[in-house]
Image 1 (cartoon, rainbow, N blue to C red):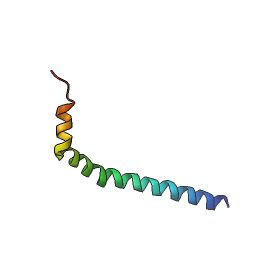
Image 2: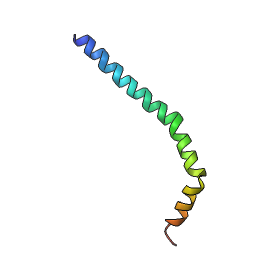
Image 3: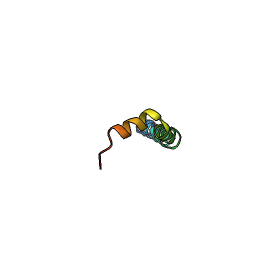
Image 4: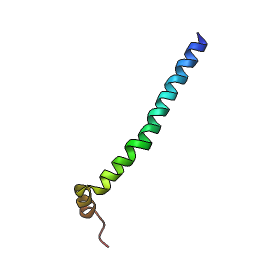
Length: 52
């Protein structure tokens, strides 16, 4: 019973780790690029930029 529980725990931790790595390698860079190339984000950046 303890072996089964530890295998399930390990599988859950591995699944969460794979999802995190997948997100950080494939989804996040696309989101950053979309944010940098978005005209609406650029307008907000200029609107809320501190005046020098």
